[in-house]
Length: 184
Length: 260
Image (cartoon, rainbow over all chains, first blue to last red; front, side, top):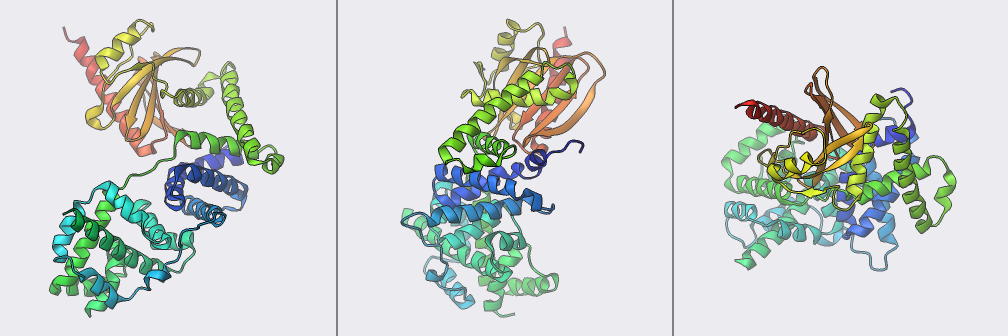
């Protein structure tokens, strides 16, 4: 385009993903005020590095910067929540099987139960997952990104994306099933 | 295929990230194994629940303003970056206001066709910043909004509620744009606001044409009597959807009102 400034290109290519950036930051920061600060900082950084961005997936690129800004902000907090996926164990198919079958009715009945889960319960259960799992689940189910994009944003190998998704879903499923069973 | 292996492959299968040759192998296993099939079903239910029910937190308008202002402030001078955060924010709001006033000042320059989209953008943002989404007559009832305009404008904009199409009418205001008073109709879609500017403009009808300004999408069209500009932070497809529904309903309304 004639007279296309850096700012104009940035607004056209990157800023349409501001909603995704904010949504992701909210899941990281667990409080919208901090999320706004993180997104603003991320956009400023993105703008500064925009000359080095040669096309490609602007959304994944911005979300990666958002993620880094959120992590920087979280490191400054006195009580940082656990980011680690390790504490709940590594992915193990046999364990998945046991978890999926552990003490709550037949799986098909469970599918029906999950379908009845209210938004607030889903949000609460997802928020309660360790951050590593929550992150890949939000990127996959909310932003609908591919494994490759998630791998780039979260800076983990493809195999880890796959195992964290599987494990995260199983954990989320378990939490939901427990809560739903309690509510009767 | 063993159950253990099948279970490790169910997620990539569900996510459409699975090699084709192994898909058939997995599907054969799923046909014969009720447990694995049930796991896939509950995974599907979970995925559908997350996608369908989880609230999507769109960036608040204030954040759009902050980000754009911060970028505008970062562009001309690197020094702004060295200021402490509260100063940066103050400077940022100053640049936003300065930017809007500049847009308004430039609107007095005669090359108006080029500048209309900028004016539409500035007016939309002004409305959004007003705290009431720029609505002076709050009503979802076209029979309230239309007479309200009658006392304030020398023309009658087509006012149609599009709630059944997912775009409920929220109200309207009178604005000043392109050197004249215009009608601004405010619609909502999910959490988003659409402002539709309407004013008389005789000439050939124009089909809906899309453009963008600073992250907002615009659709412009004309029916030979009126010019229409719709602007929103909705994505281009949804805004075009709105434009088509409005244009169709407005055209239908006209034929109706011409009947005796």
